[in-house]
Image (cartoon, rainbow, N blue to C red; front, side, top):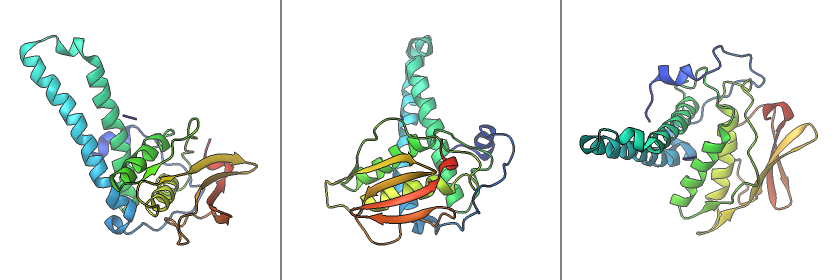
Length: 219
């Protein structure tokens, strides 16, 4: 797909009330000592720059063509999409680091921009993430405080991918099986991948590392 948004603008997109947690609240990672948190910052900064450039170009064009906005609505739409996605990712990053900026904001389709961000992080390091097959599942809003599940999901992909040799691309999948969802990726490391997620299971099956989560955490 495809911001620094204030906390009010972020909370307005939420579901309106805090919902009971289906998973225990997690301890926060170590802020910028968390490898994913550190890798995300330059990616988000670049995307904010893209949105700013689109708006700056439109502003300059308005000086010579007062009807530029009517002629270029797709530029405004693209900038809005970037801001919306990056706003969600910044709120997720801040909440995972301890700021609780996510508040009531929940993004059912939040895995889509998050996976795209992880791929951009890996590509900056000379690795890649295989393309998904089909749409990603939706996040269920009642899991913990909203940040735990997507952060564990993204951490697993990023930490596995960064262990690949240069120019390698991480094979992975997410699919339902019985009463669980299974996030599987190539087994590139034997270390624990990302934060603990109460209610989930970390498995090794042959050449795959698998995170099993309850079926009602995704849809």
